[in-house]
Picture 1 (cartoon, rainbow, N blue to C red):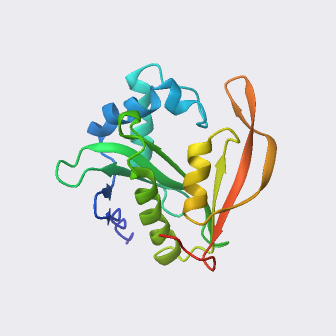
Picture 2: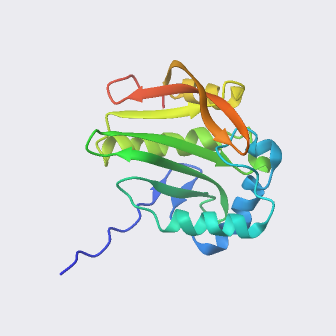
Picture 3: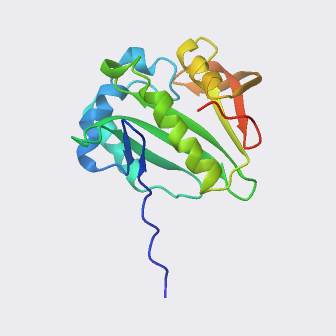
Length: 185
């Protein structure tokens, strides 16, 4: 008999609730994925139609926890989605994964991404037992680079023409945080 699926973990901070995505989160994610400014450093082109964001949210719901997992970042009282954090490219046996995050453009500069990523890192190092978490960040994405550095990530170098978005090749900066590194959150 097959084991029942493990429930999606809910993570809480003082201001946020990280929960499993629901289909009704598509409009909130379209505010992120449909915004050219928010997407200029992302790993896929801007969503021009809501259906693209709906498809993305369906993928977020149907994830394989050993390889990737997505959390809707929500306000705790209203449960309204205001962004997303995830780990992906998970290599649980090698105890490493990469992370990503995006917040509703109207909610930038409130420390939401920092708080949500810190909660997810606690889960990754604690519950998953990861040893290494990395973030691939566009060299011009100073806000994301500052966030990573604030959380203790170290820049390990630049990867040239690492990512293709549309018809454009992009460089990435490789940031990493080890379980043994000092935590700043």
